[in-house]
Length: 110
Image (tube, rainbow, N blue to C red; front, side, top):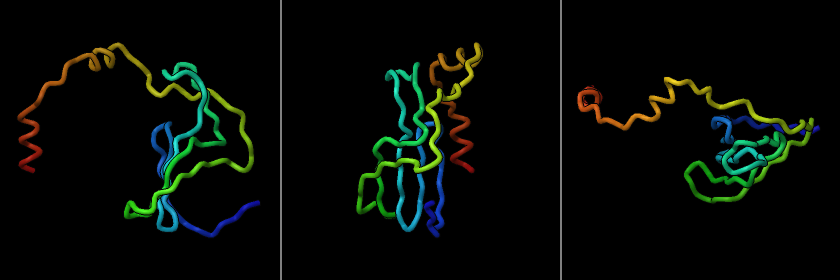
């Protein structure tokens, strides 16, 4: 198999993609998927990414990347629901934004 002796960090970006930092570079790629644009019938393709990008930690030297898992292969699967809707949550989402000046003042005084 493949073995590399490098250390780094990675961050999962919700169910959309991931960033990883290794050897002085940052990499980002979205997970590959297929389906309609609304995501109603989305299926994750777990062993591949969409084309992504890379740059050094200062934001220079940009490059394109694309990932493929070498082994073991997994079957494509439907992602778990990202959000569980409730009536109360739906009502909150329909409310118009209201500026809370007192709260903003508290933050600015802190």
